[in-house]
Image (cartoon, rainbow over all chains, first blue to last red; front, top):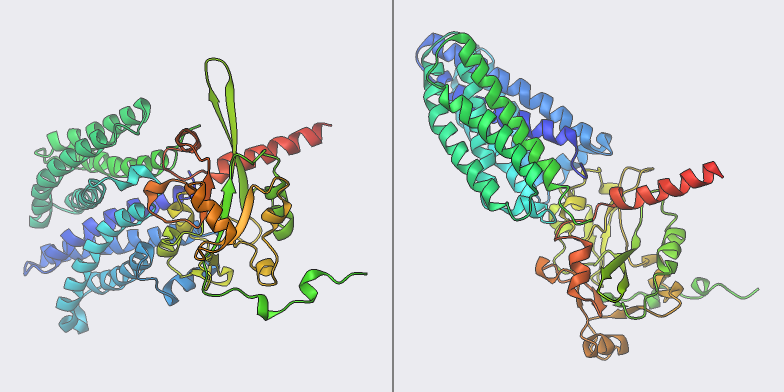
Length: 260
Length: 230
């Protein structure tokens, strides 16, 4: 894959899941139920950890990792990556602020929560704009790309939240969201792959249908009513596999489309 | 010993308020690679990197095969996607319209490489920074042509001011119907091609970047393998 390699795939996956987990976790964290609040903060803590690890992969992908500070010190308003780095920084700070025990700074919680939600929305969406800005790659110019990546991020996050900790209202809410998000993701994925059928060869298209659509979206959607721990964990694993496979497919196939 | 040309000239030769451009007449190009070799030498470009390449195109027909050659370099676009994509503003534009990279600001994120539809940018393996053609700024500042233009034995490459309608090369460009490579990208390049046919573009790529890593490093590695075996 060139110029964006495997570290970028890992970053896109972790950032997407972190965004989804933070959104659902922040809703639970604002609950008056102590158990639900604790569960929400746990989800946000996981989101913070995921995004931090993702950021390390992002820096590792640079050919000059030591110069990463230049990205923070200078800002090209036309660059999606410049915006994305700032969104990631705001996300990290607000996620840690929400995840830590409320204690002394109770008054900052509301601001932190809303900042986190806004940053999470940005984190879920901006990677698609980075790909769209690489307008040398025709596969990334489709109109379905932005909603597909955003919904995939939220879906992955919802599944992860549903599988964390004990059964609670937060996990029930996340499970309800899975139905909606899974259905949306199925629709968007189908529309996307049909839309790019003219430029993608049969084998990569077949892999997309099998791994992303069937295994990563349709099978978990059919199993969304099952409440056993093993079923929930299995469903979460398939959704996350599908989310990773989507991003890997987009970068691998997208960067390989050229004539001989 | 005669003075070298750049020792006798100074800032008076610096061109401003113009659009530096290159006209490529494909019917004159023989694919000799003098341009890419002179460029590699002039800028001491490292292994695997090419600021300028010559693309080969073959079109088999019933009674013959047509072969064409096209020197490919940075197009110095008026609407440069690399400039928009770079998060550190390492890519800028000089007064004469040419697009250049400020290597001190480059962190190697490769957004410019992904944004360029012409595959003109690569990562220098020694420095880890993005690099591309700058129309030999150090030569044009003292009144010389870029190295590729000077080296071309058939005058297939011509350096001129696209913004000056009185420039003889600009007139030739207009008379011969020179056009941009991949016009649909909407980048408005300053490098225009004459006798540039659509089947060449289709052969080159289908609207996406040429991967230098795929194309040129394999060629160099093959050469090294032959040398080691000799």
